[in-house]
Length: 417
Image 1 (cartoon, rainbow, N blue to C red):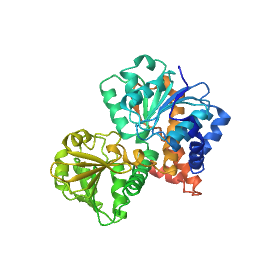
Image 2 (cartoon, rainbow, N blue to C red):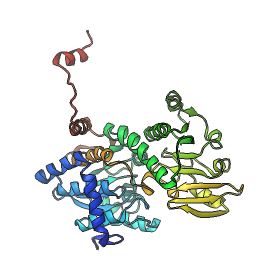
Image 3 (tube, rainbow, N blue to C red):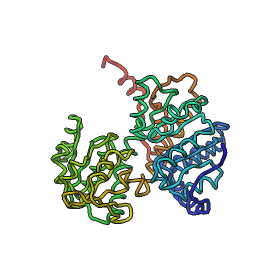
Image 4 (cartoon, rainbow, N blue to C red):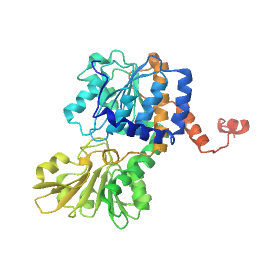
């Protein structure tokens, strides 16, 4: 590798170290793993490339893996989610870091490629950009890859498409699908952090407003739940009839996007699909409606179409861009239509990411120990890892739970009761 890092300014490191120290004090699972890894050095000599939203919680995961002996090469997974002081702190700690806030698309791709140039053994991805580049532009760098882990729904969708086409070159653990990830990170983490971003950026009340949530997967459930608890009327749009029934039975209105568009004050899309909110929908929205995206890529809200259809564009507040449509109404977009909770805020709470990143670290160990016998496919997180993370989380809270007696085990395993 020709250079150790490409970041904004190494002098920002003290602020980044402070942020990392704060989250460390609120991430007991990772702190426990760090202590264990320093002793056992399970990643001694292992090269890991990581592309995850580069803020303090991610930085601490990188330091935990490095404490276990890993040679870390790090980049971000969104051009607006990298925090420059955190990137500087990692570089100051001796890791290879290639990321800065506000990178162009070309710079972002260059950073992804630079992150891969140390020929990793293990990939930790968020959205599939590392794996995508290894399979397209730089297949030569995939030769030493044993396997990897994918953090988010969008990335798992991409990986499963690659597996179906028979082109996936190595096993990838679907960390997103672990119970200790999606049931908590996706629901409670997304639910809280999306509204944190919307409220801090708009400084507007949520109570009394009509919120339209696009989709009703785990992320959307958290978003809808928190909107309702803040006093909003919630409308859910869905394409899946079973999920639509769930949304209705959870107490929310359910309708098509065309029906919901004129009613909403705030829109949040969290589907992993494209163009869930189109210009046609926008033209029927209220003046100064607020649009946000909580999915990984900036295509859920049709930003390209909005740019083309607008007759005027201006900054309304920091992180909020206003677009005037031909009908004279303004549409306000937070975070350029990118992942609202991380592009325009600090992402999920530390305690939530503690669970997700504990699953990541342990899944990376699983790849290291088992890659020779794993298929080149998307594989589930082992039940043992899910169970271990859950039990450690309860222990951190000081909570004890019951165990089955031998009689109960026999009863549950018998058909002749």
